[in-house]
Length: 183
Length: 151
Image (cartoon, rainbow over all chains, first blue to last red; front, side, top):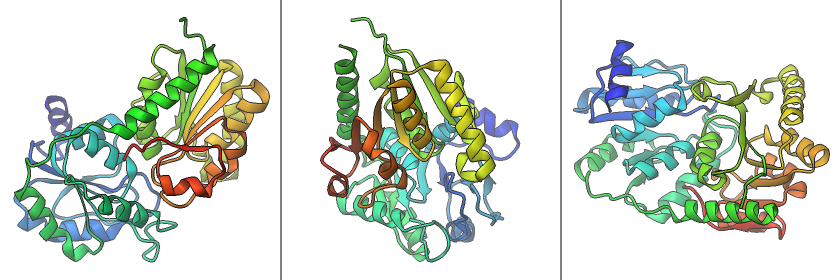
């Protein structure tokens, strides 16, 4: 926490707090103003500091701190020290929230609004939604955002990170292939 | 056992990069090098080769391909591992046909039902081809494997 708090303070942008809500739109080149606008609109009702990573989105929130991009280790620290992460259905954020045990609220980008080149984020969101992870919630309309946020913040602490079996199996499989090749 | 094989880790920035970071344990003890795009998200990485995003346009593509070739020529990898995206295509073709490297590809966990363009391009030459969602198996050939996913 220390390093991050300092880093944020030194830029004079926000005072880092452990109960931050981090909104992150990743590195995709299209904008996703729908999410930022909604976050900006409800920021007043939310008793938490909100930090927005805009990415390539053109809309600048008026009521939250924001930036475009940061190095990946900084983004990891932001996620690690957040009470809730809200994000498009980008897999980097999903992986990190799972690893750190941080509650995640996903709102997928849609092709029809020019937010992505296809609807694969809908597929990810649905596949994860169907799995029923306690830690990951999905919404499909921005109107659901505030209610879902408050619900997650109210229930916080219920989640305990579980061992990532998929990751362990992937490492094992790749390792075995390399060792086989070494012989 | 002495670990002599040199392994090149190749990916674009963003989720692909996060995926590689998750799997570094698989390469522990081996000499490795990392090749990725020069972006703000990757600007804190040390001991890394950077190229401009080859998807940005024809000039970036040509310059990027030349750079990838020269990096591989210098490093002479025995194995290449990639999580995508398109940066894997020239890297894998050079790796396979110029350096006889073994190729390991992990299809991005963003691909649930549809194969990626990168995956389709390099499937024929990849030695270990992993997908992260079971439904995707039937969209690739018998070589594709599913052992689990990161998300």
